[in-house]
Image (cartoon, rainbow, N blue to C red; front, side, top):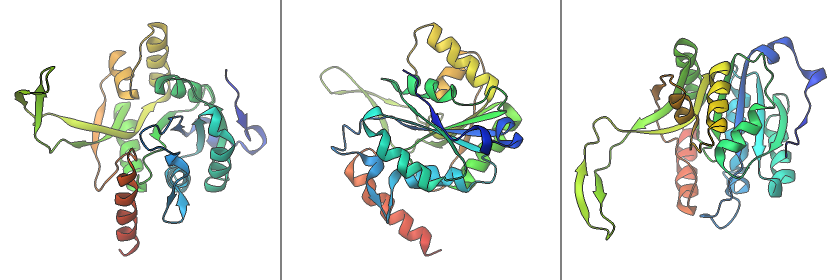
Length: 245
């Protein structure tokens, strides 16, 4: 059920309506963490505050939509409104899968928005530079995503857990967020995905399935997703390092 609470309308400028909107996806269950990772303390701020705050501080982002789980809506909305008091335009409850959550977020973006960025709320170390570089590429190509080359040795295994063969990693990249698209292209891709009953794990997959190419933008530094408790420790160390530079 779509229930979009918003501070749209009166605070909406023409720039907001036709500019770049960010959809922050915070609808996960945090099952592997054992607690809500988005409210976990990260150097004095909740994880979500870092993620949404990065887009709030980026001058190229005009407005923000938060998509969250119904069970955590009150707490996450409070964090979001504190971290992005001027740019947060709407909060909406997500679906049972990520692509359904993103779809709900897209319904809160005005029809005349020019570009839409989608970002995982569990990636709190995204930088202003990464957002701007991805957006610049998306403006030139129509679709772009932050990513990094795979550096680990990769193996394919059988059902018993034994190695079958090595996998050539020379052309493999791990895709991250933000992923930024021309608004009409992303909407069309999601319409195609939903009408076909598909289940995609990211926006790049939906856009590719709709027949459009997606450019990858290499991220510098760690832009990983908080999945396990140890990831919070790593994120703390990185933020402390950034504060010293």
